[in-house]
Image (cartoon, rainbow, N blue to C red; front, side):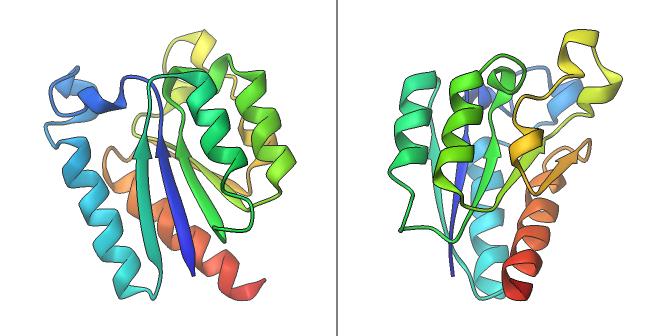
Length: 145
């Protein structure tokens, strides 16, 4: 089982960006914990990050036939990117949306996710633990499919 973890804009700053919201753990540490948990659950996890919307779309499109599932934290693109939403819908790979903060308890513009409607699930509000919870949910879903 192969899973791709995509991190979007500004997530490369996790660990130093607003630690009161996102914690002090680096993105690399989060990614490593997802890779290790994936191995424990029998999945190979590849990680990838970009600050550029078009690159995220390209990565999603190139995932078809390569990955069984996708984890995505699109960052701010969650609330604005129709093209990322459409790319997820087009590739038809089970996708789980991730957010370290509870987007529903933040600024009103963050309450709307364009991605959630084309995802099998959404994990929000558990800081870095959101990633492994999303991975566990995705693997469970894929094993039942």
